[in-house]
Amino acid sequence: MAIEVMTAWASDPDGIDDFIFDRIRSIIDDAENGNPLRAAVDLIHGFVNLSGTLLIQRESEMHVSDIDTLRQLGLEYQTDA
Image (spheres, rainbow, N blue to C red):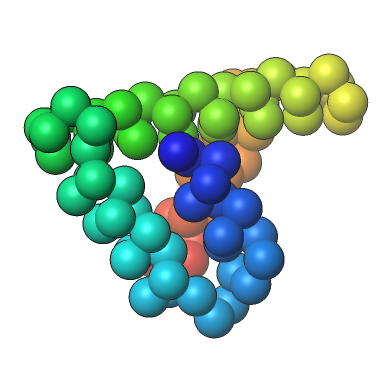
């Protein structure tokens, strides 16, 4: 599910906020188990796993540790806030 949402984002990262929101809402509303909270938790879990996988891939390709990447991102978000 997380890859589906991120694929939508990657196709047009500047212009699809409504589409992403609608896609997330659809995933939660169409929960197979009939439990929207569980669907939301599953989606968050998917994003955590996707993020971890990307951190591992970045570390492997660029020799930058996952912690260093997270620190760098944290600093960038602090600067933007």
